[in-house]
Image (cartoon, rainbow, N blue to C red; front, side, top):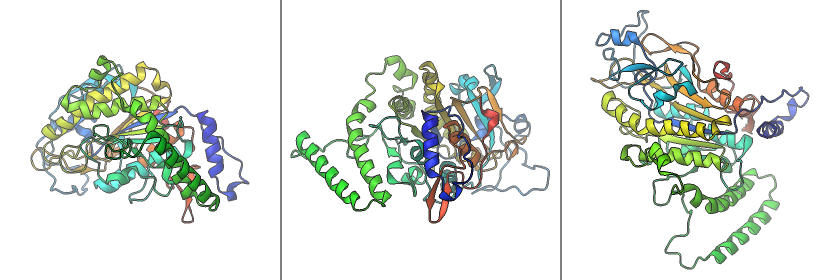
Length: 455
């Protein structure tokens, strides 16, 4: 079904000028739904997944790559080379090195495929976050979730195709624009759910003060609104924005009925709740979001994005001041819930058609900022995939001896997105939307599928 829907969507999106060209078959779909875990702030690859003995051996010495290249940092003066404060060990049958900062995810490496040489054209949070989410440095472009919603839609008619679960403490860098549909129809924008708030979804329920609103009056109002919208749309059949708003409102009405059950975790077993860390203050927020993500894909949501860390200089992965304290805190809040989600998906058989992604906007430098912090590094960072269509226990790409820059198998956001669309049964070069005279696409004019991590 996913392959067929992808083919239908792509055929309808091809420009008329390409009609004479023989159509290329869409890649077979391996994935039906996606959960993306996004580490806001720039997770330090050299303290988590990128083990470098040379960095340990040269700890405290001046950083000199030896080729005369100028060494610069984003907002600081490059300090001495700094080994990770965490210990390293091999894990799993694949022998993957993971630091002691992530003891739970370390046990899952045989299910993961790592991209060890991802790069970013920016080492500034705002543009780099846009780039990793939309393929463009500037705001106003659709996110990956919006493109997936546009190309394939939801798997059920009472839930959105694209849901965003921000960190309970606040939105990431770029705020709500990190979840935008850009120039795509408005109904493809991410539906934001703040699961820890008293009102998880804006206007989900009738305010207590609105005593005049009854179930009957509400239904009558919705019926009237539907008729007015239909009459208005009939006179403006070429206005896709209007139809998108109508569909968005209708979806919201259906979601109001489905959301209370979806967001109620009381039916989950005590063991499940404990595995996600719901009873521990440090892991409860991210753990609740991870558990909700699993419940959402079970009920038909196509793409769920879960954020770890909010915007600002603390409480996220932007560890300028202290890797031991700042990274330790945010890693502990994410590690157990993310590992529980992966195991839960696997035990329920959901990994057979679900893709789980872990990523960030860029990495950190191998030398110190101040005494024990690290500055931004777009030269290399790590991401991993797990689930449908993925070859488990492998790694692609390699950074240099210090985890400063990618040297082999470098990949970028375009390759990242092309691979995800490929797994969904979509050729990334053919999923387009005409905007301002340009056939725009998620991967712009770049990107190749990273076949090395595909099963």
